[in-house]
Length: 203
Image (cartoon, rainbow, N blue to C red):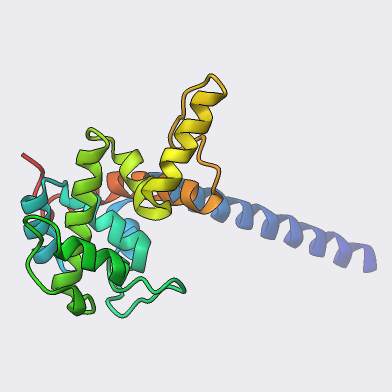
């Protein structure tokens, strides 16, 4: 009797292990393929009217701008960083003041960064300016957006001094910035595929 019970418990344990393994495998397939229902859960979208408008003004793919907002704030307009960055696109007030003083600044006052519409306008302007600065390189612009243009310039100079070429994102020495660039580049594809009917494709 005891041996029979042990055999039954052993068979049940095997089935539990098999079922758990199958669920893990299914989860991995879903995570890698990211069907729309799954993508919309992990990659939300809000403020699409402002995203489309500001992306058009600044020559951006709105799916890229949405990806930056997702990574920066998770679409939380009240987000604040330990460094003092504000809102959806996590713009520093000092950066916003510089943007406001630039030729052709975005609509809105720098002091109103907590307003989602103003925040998106300033973040889009800054991202678009960085992409132009780096000859259309989105990875360069994202690295500078996160770590600052001075750090990116230093990393490139160090690579040249070593006789090599600085490759993005592989050669970024800051783990946070490297993950930041990788996450946004991956999310960009997800947002373009998942929300193509809500985020106007770039012309």
